[in-house]
Length: 154
Image (cartoon, rainbow, N blue to C red; front, side, top):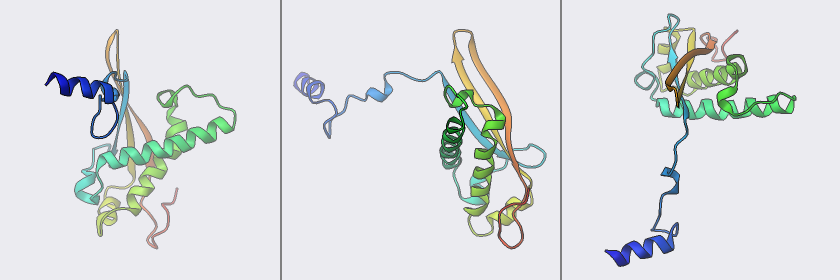
């Protein structure tokens, strides 16, 4: 056992060995996004659309990165994603909800229309010396897509 441990420490990240450096520290900040109906009640996204909420978060994060690049190109300084304002996140949220409409399972978009306008909420989660902080904010609201399958009208 000691020999195997010594080999793993020497070899480090060479397959099939790993010392898992990704777990040596954790960020004090994270976020969650969720979809709600017109009344602000959460919608069971996976049951309606077959899209997992983890995928929704990844789509939102990708869109948020694009928005951040556009803002920085326009001269706006942003110190990390957690410091973007709700208004700055709005385009990413709108594109995420539009993606959800267009990538739902058969019949899913029609079910989403019953809940329209869809709302995307962003929950900040932060752990600090002063304890745990949770703050929720509405990021985007998107009406139902047009009957012809086009993008939602604003």
